[in-house]
Length: 474
Ligand code: PMP
Image (cartoon, rainbow, N blue to C red; front, side, top):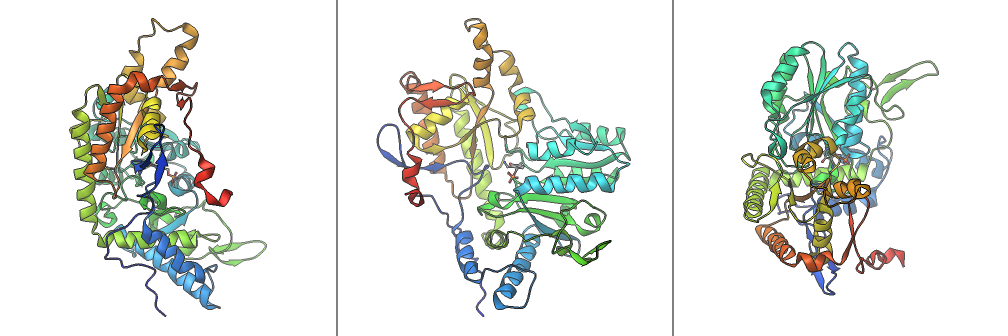
């Protein structure tokens, strides 16, 4: 049987949706510019081709009886292998598990398991720049969370403060269950010193969980070198919509954890009184029917990225990002959040002194077909810290008292621009031109909008006819 899984892994990646066009408020139609990859980048054509190739064979796994079951089972096993290969994780040390709702499900799984497995260690050290998915789960299970400070102050905060981190580990030595940190922030794109953090955690008997959701598509991951205990990411952040979350863990650590989802697929024998888990990975952790099609599609994308190769992906990401930062710095009245002397990848966030984040994001969409994200990006504590000084200094003297909260809400957030593999310097130029024009035309543009109580802005006349975009609704 020809079993290529759908693509030539040496060809450059193609993306679906680069030519999507939308009507804009001025009446014309523009090609949409997608600068929202940190939320979910555009799908790769490889993912779609792989899905289409596997779908005619679609079958549940865990069976070798009929041909389709064999093909699906083998393809899923191949997907597990590709994940480890992509992350430079030796299969003798690590295993990969496909989880439900992205990174969130996998982090919840690990945090629950570690609390049960190491009840004498109550402290969890969490970085101060985390997405809620890598913060809130750790606050459960009677854990005591201590937040690791960042270097710097106010809007110029940088990465994890390694001295403060070392002090926390010394202060709580022996009581720290694990450390939770993202390799790259989903707000500022700032990178954390994962190698140093891992060796320090291990020195103090703590484990480390790395949320790789924002790094995995942009940076080479080398788990064998880094030695992290848990590395977690979402397939949808790597150009594969409808794909699962991925938990990669050291098998020797995973073996000590209880608390995974239980059911069929992960057990070798069950009686009314007892059950036994399958001793081998990934089956031991993979109860229920996994997202087979999504997992295999993701694996084909990871395979292709390796051949891209990833060093080129890293270079593209770094150079497009520094071009974006330099161009933004040349604009007046813009504050870029985070320490600008640091390398960034994936995403950066900023504000314009005169334009609320909700208004700027709306104008970029409505008049320029530029898709960015705004508000607090599910990282409220971090965004609040970055904004604290600005919010504190808001002059409310001319604002009626009953409108104070409404007014401050409109300022509580940022605009985030993300750079994906399909973005070019020309995309950055288009954004910068739009930002210049918006500033120049602000008085005219502003009149067309109504501020909403939640901080968003709605155009008074223009709205996308979303039903017209979807033929299946007709
Ligand atoms: N962590 C980070 C750093 C993220 O950027 C995201 C997604 N915005 C998540 C976790 C959550 O991922 P998911 O929604 O796929 O569970």
